[in-house]
Length: 638
Image (cartoon, rainbow, N blue to C red; front, side, top):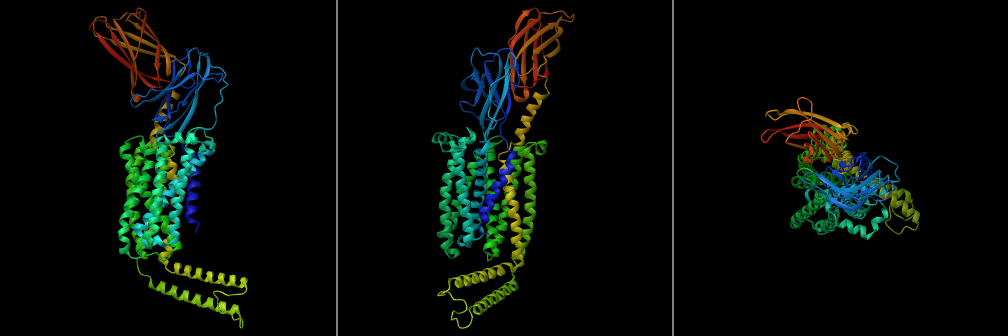
């Protein structure tokens, strides 16, 4: 049991690592121009990438490589974001040869997770390429595993540190002088601080090169400190130093003051200061992870802080109670009752904030069952239900514990006295007559082997006495077993909760899946032909507009427009306009510049559509000064 706190932290880290295999990034590439696998007739001026959420890219965030492996881009990143559209690009050099080009990109999503990928497109016709990209994704490998372990241990350490301190202050003031409880909180602080320092050092290679040696590079560390996540980790380390002062005061001056009246002047200061420090630490997670991006971040961040504080109060306090029940069986019944009320309040806060966060990250019922995030959330809800069930059993034992159990206490005292008497008789018998050693001598035994044997006997008697006293109360024994079961569920729950922080939210995953589905269902290599009848309402105002978009996919296209009269012959009109709009992404209308080749015949060589999807083609036909009509139709572009 002395190793219980360290064991809880270790198991949480190991289980978290096992669950992290389902994790993925929280921003995703939703489109590119040219598209993946596209074959364009001439070299584009620029390569652009579109993401589902805000991302941060370095100078080499987007690299375009020729078939020979040489850089084909200028190396200057361009920010092309407009409104809700998150788009970045790089310009290409002039005079590029035909062949297959590779686009490799790496970024950090707004919630601090690294993402990367690669795709190809061809100029003229596909060719062989010498480009060899690293197989390891951003945030993977040994550095990724160490970073994940550090993340889980930091969560577990904060939970034990904050929850254990709250348990002592609110529920059991005498616990400040109980060594096992003090060790638990101290282990929590050490784990939290060490994990935060490790995360700060690993952040650079985690989002960059992936080489462990870069963790000790001052230049890489300086780059990390300039980021939002680096600032959050630095603030967390500073707050860990303040937390050390709080723990020193809690287990120093506060523990040495005997009566409640002597402690009252410290309680308010420690409670206020501890709440501020704990909220500040929780805020560093809220400012740099899920809550800081997506839907309603201004409301999500404070609710996330409340959620983390409630988790710490419930689960950290539960760990402290488990240690107290096993290592200090004389814990007062009133302390157990106060923790029961504290846990009930924490669960109520968790239910309210968790419901909001679930809606915010999932967004729909289909995402709840059809995405990795939704399935992990369902697993978490199931574990919470089990935990509440075990907690209800613990609450029953708590009510029984509140009833006096004098008979059991007297019985335990009688058994303890009998054990002491028996031990003395055993010591006297083993000493033997005429030895002059006495029953169980304290010192002066000439034979060191004999002295060690007597010391072991005395320790065994003391241990048996404490165990008999501990197990004499059935309610206390039942509560101890149920709390141990709660602690086991908590370890798994903590791992699942931490895995959720590194898993793509269901709302984002469905958005990416829809974009990929559009690209998969469109016909990429077949021209798109559209026929639209029109009637401007004036004399001889009817006819047909035929549009041909080649190759009919995202990127550069050639557009041909033919206007025919009712007799099927080419017909000239006063004015013709064509535009494309992607309503679901709020792109457009993109007006197409048409060149008139002959009466009733127009062409455009640069009809560029940046993304696949259901595009709305709008055609405006004017047959006279006053007769005009606008017609449109949706077409699927791959």
